[in-house]
Image (tube, rainbow, N blue to C red; front, side, top):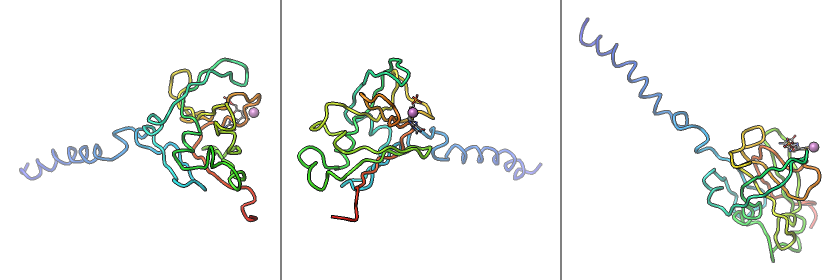
Length: 177
Ligand SMILES: Nc1nc2c(c(=O)[nH]1)N[C@H]1C(S)=C(S)[C@@H](COP(=O)(O)O)O[C@H]1N2
Ligand SMILES: [Mo]
């Protein structure tokens, strides 16, 4: 065997392995850097939040009951904190034309639910809704997670949107002043 052939046989698999390990995403695990939540629509600062961003925002734990009445604890970021970061009108700014705004909470399976902005504003309500990323202390697996909306005080849980992908601020009767 010539030296060149020998090298080719030895080096080709090694080179292939080296290239494969350089492939971004795969080697590191896709979830570490993937976008978790898009915040858009009529917000001043549209956001793409990653897992680390959700960890750095204010966090709350809620002891609630699931729809069957079993106690469960969810932890995550208050929707108000996310909306504030995105520059949505809250507090003193939530008045006048802003009262026509609503939040569309969208899910990976095409499900979506609508909320009026005051439902998240601590000036209007003492209920704290969160975008939860932990359930009973553990990350939430699909198809419930990785993110789920949790709203305390609702008898039916149809708005507890599972596998949330986006929050979009929109305006009712957008065409008329
Ligand atoms: N993405 C998504 N979220 C969803 C639904 C859905 O079909 N898709 N169903 C809703 C309804 S009607 C209910 S009652 C609750 C059920 O939540 P559970 O699966 O934790 O019992 O999820 C809500 N969130
Ligand atoms: Mo439901």
